[in-house]
Image 1: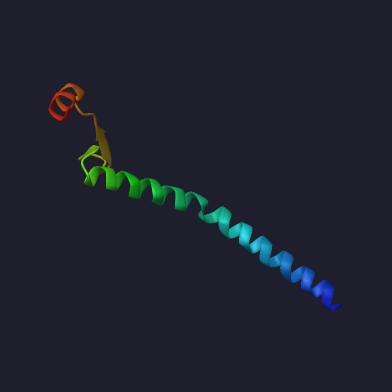
Image 2 (image 1 turned 90 degrees about the vertical axis):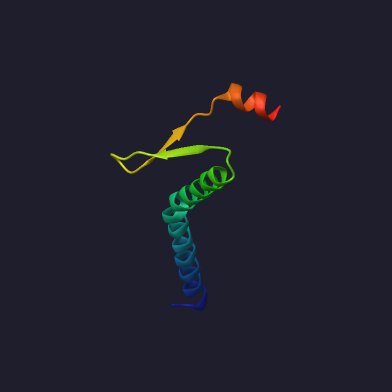
Length: 73
C-alpha cells in the first residue's frame, strides 16, 4: 500500500466519522437550544407554563392580552 492510498483511506474514514457524528447529534443540539430558549422566556416572564399532574409535562398557558395591553401600554 502506497503512502497516498493510506492517506486517502485515512482522510475518507475521518470525514465519514465526522458526518456520522453530526448526524447523530443534530436532533440533540436542536432540542437543547429550544429547551434553553423556552426556559429563558419563562424565567423572564414572557411565557408561562403549568405542570400537568397526570403526565408531568409542561402545558403552555395563554396570557389575557387585554390585561397586558392595558397594563404595559
